[in-house]
Length: 126
Image 1 (cartoon, rainbow, N blue to C red):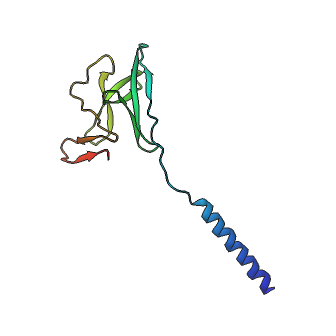
Image 2: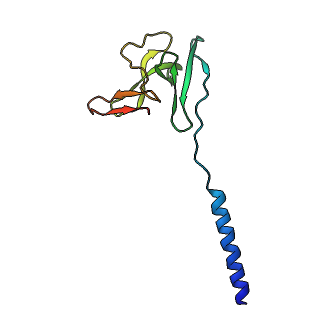
Image 3: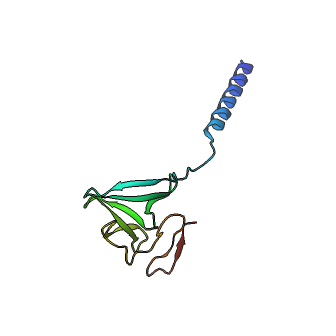
């Protein structure tokens, strides 16, 4: 009886080690595809953007480096800027219809270097 319990315990330990071992997987991120995306504005016009990042941290920017986001209300892609609390927010400037005057390039992503107003902290993409 004692040998059956110890054999059962040994089998359970082997199964537990096996399940633990297969549960461990290497952590990896897949970079964004290096292609140009064609995006459509509400009026049917086309704009071009590239994606940056990986599955955890990513976004879109124009070919000349301005971050853009889709504005649900107007159904347009707009230039993005950073709010006081460090979040990406839409501007009132529609990509393709407005110039991005006053909006910095690369506010997020791998080349970003920006300063959040009134905080004095610099953040970097790298």
